[in-house]
Length: 265
Image 1: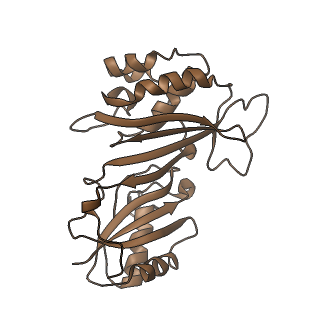
Image 2: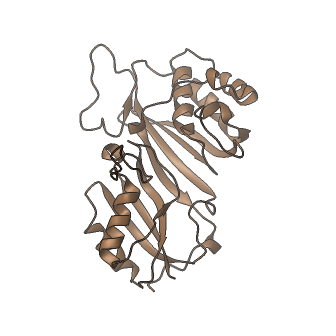
């Protein structure tokens, strides 16, 4: 059965996250997965299960989420994107569609993901964030010491047990992950951009890393707390979980051999 790979972007503000969920009345909640499955079923007249590479939380955005589904219909990729987008709401878009190998698995074959967290510091004394960016940029009251944050961010890079940076209810076979990059930039408009790239992430891991860096930036924690959290895996030593609106999934990468040639079927 033909399998398709989708690159999906969405504004997560009005979604209950990526994963399909039911309300207390057993009705489908508005999730990205559910919207995509409805669009595929309407376009191809065949019910499908759309599998996403990353289960983003409510309010979290994506520029390059990867999803796949199998369907007996053979459709040119360019037409598939257009057919789905005509049936999707304005806050979710299929940016590209490709024919994929039948064995393609967006979760297990992923080798790297990159998240971006954007925040604005110094929003105090009644200063409210720009209303045009509140869906995508988090705000904090204190000014940030960028130098201390960068020193701390460098300690995150590497293969470590990140249990101390995960939600307490996280249940995984292993909490060891490899972080390839953790970088902090100040944008021309003054916003702070924190980029974290790794082979995988635990539940709320990026938002807790950012929350810890913010505590370091405001002077409440020393930069060395990062090494202590990694050594002890003590979640109590880390900072708070930052709000979802500042987080965006930028891209997900796979080995070339797991992807089909990007030509129309």
